[in-house]
Image (cartoon, rainbow, N blue to C red; front, side, top):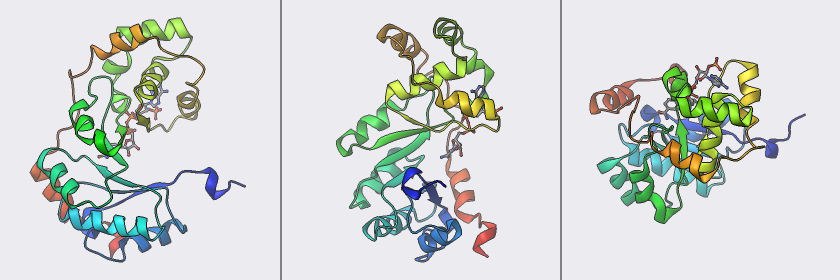
Length: 218
Ligand SMILES: NC(=O)c1ccc[n+]([C@@H]2O[C@H](COP(=O)([O-])OP(=O)(O)OC[C@H]3O[C@@H](n4cnc5c(N)ncnc54)[C@H](OP(=O)(O)O)[C@@H]3O)[C@@H](O)[C@H]2O)c1
């Protein structure tokens, strides 16, 4: 049997629930848990400062051990930080060798906020995974190209959350702690930074999220 303290559970509050004072309790009830380890507000949409107040209260009440935000940048990030009494412990942003969001992380450095990178494998983009540098390092370390990319994430200090429906890939994705990329190899991979982003948030998409009620709300 898996003990609760041996697993890390993270979840998110959706924008239509940001002003609903029962949202966190409903989430915990659906999960069958007394607390989660990390609780996010999902998007900088709708009344996201009210959503952050909800999760701050959950933190004070022992219902989450840490607080997260997702896809916040520019004015919305500043608005969130100004309203936050407890600064976010984690920010989730699109992060991979083409995009490391150093500017936002520089802004958050004073709070010690950690980066959790989504799309760590470029959502499976073979153009990213098959970059020549990853193929060369995969040969050198007897690993797959994806393992080289994920090892790079951990050496960058990022929390990484690769998605996979393939049991072999899931096993491979944790098997990255028996080798270390050299500083020169990390510097070579850094040359890819800033060359591509798969998703750019816009106000229209965020307004859509703010109005999108989820089935379990009914
Ligand atoms: N905050 C946000 O706005 C946001 C947005 C998007 C995503 N996310 C989160 O980010 C996480 C990752 O997203 P994602 O799954 O879309 O992108 P991803 O992890 O970058 O890529 C997943 C793709 O990579 C493939 N893959 C995984 N491991 C592999 C391996 N070892 N070798 C080769 N291919 C491999 C998967 O295929 P197989 O299934 O065949 O392994 C799948 O096609 C998810 O938890 C998602 O919910 C958050």
